[in-house]
Amino acid sequence: MLTVYCWLLCLYPGSYRHEFGEEMTSVFCEARSELPLVMAAKIKFYRREFCGLLLGALCAHFDLLFGHSIPFRRFDMQPQFRFPRSTVFLMLVIFAGVMLTIAKASSIAGDTVGSVWPSLISVLAFMLVTMCTAAAVVWRILHTLRRSGVRRLENVQSWMYSVESNGKQ
Amino acid sequence: METFAISEPVLLVLLSLAERPRHGYAILKDVESMSDGRVLLSTGTLYGALQRLFDHGWIERVEEDNTARDRRTYRLTSRGRRNLQMEIERMRRLTKVAALRMARKEA
Image (cartoon, rainbow over the protein chains, first blue to last red):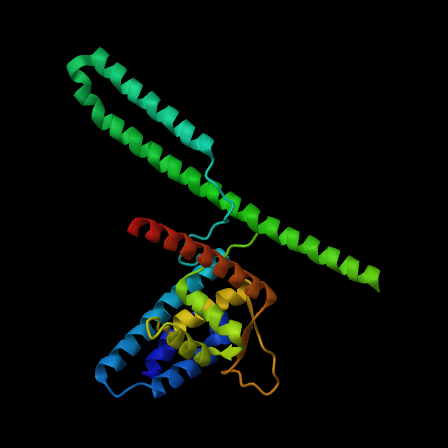
């Protein structure tokens, strides 16, 4: 099983393996040596370890690709962040506009409204895709700004600290 | 302001290190005992969490000359301790509200 463990460890990025590989193998061996003799416990242990390794390797590659960790399980967002109220208002206005347009079209076209639905569905699908893309782009920009802002603030704080300590000396 | 929303396994890892510095296997056993055997971490999960906490500057390695590379010890940094305290405070407020709500419902 140690061979399988080492083989799965190869799925991690090289830098991660170099940093934690030996430690992880050592902890695995230690935990394995204390396993009870019951077969069910052994199966559970190996299942947990191997699933954990696969998931860990996936997360490590994600970190390497995107430069930041997958957020912890709960939603990783600034506690002071609030969804703008104006957005809710705008969405309601748009929704009311769409409903009014549909009502107007149905009153004009009468029974022929049924033929409008296929094109309406495709338009709605297009709008949904566009909105999702725009939201992803905005989220990425905000995230980048936040990261760079925090880094700049840290630089300023460390600079101020060094200036203060030099002043005291 | 830093994010402090963390999952239960990460919280338990932080609590384990809050008491004293520990190495990987000691953390694993301590988390198991703290949660009465409910939370069983795999090495993949444990080191994933340790790496993230390490990257965020919440924990650090204890530098000792005689420590083997496969048995390194970790401890909380001041930033990690501060964030842990904030998280505990958040949970305390939550349980207080929960208790009040439950009491109101029962009354």
